Image (cartoon, rainbow, N blue to C red):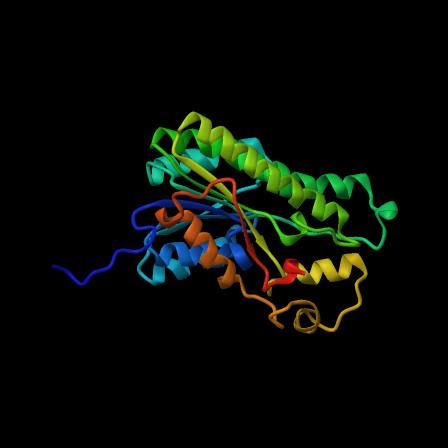
Length: 263
């Protein structure tokens, strides 16, 4: 009998997009700590390499790769690299996203609308499209799509962002049903973070014209628990959905928001 306890995703291979910082990096680090071999992808390759090096320094397996989630060719190269390096794929975390607000949708340009759709919606579509065949080849896997509480409730000044996250929510449910019908062993769920301490909020506040004195003050006033979450709070939820602990969950929404949407 041994005292060794395997990690919750031991020997699984995970791909995390937008993994250079914030929630994506926390997800990659936590999955690696729980035994997964992780590919960290991002537009910012240098930052992704730093994140991968930190995982390697802990004795876990990680590799960084440049990926533009809006580009099919970039995805094709990414999946070829995963197959060559790891030989399989078990977990996809479609995390890459951008947030652009505006005081009024009447002032929002079509170009900006489309750029946000391209990253937040097209990126999730392409990730799913290119990763599913490799997961199906190996008999299953877990796709985790990063939505937001903005995909559940409206937000003045954030209509374009909310539209993308609402799309991710229902795309997730539809692909979950497709995979279930095929009995391919692939589960698909969405995660809906609330006010989480990431650099994303700096851009949201700046572009939406929201007057604020810091995310902590906003969270203290708006969140029932009284404080903002951290990327690690979200990463723990992702580990659960990636692991066999959630084997009977698909098409579900995991809300991590300190009670914000309970009101």
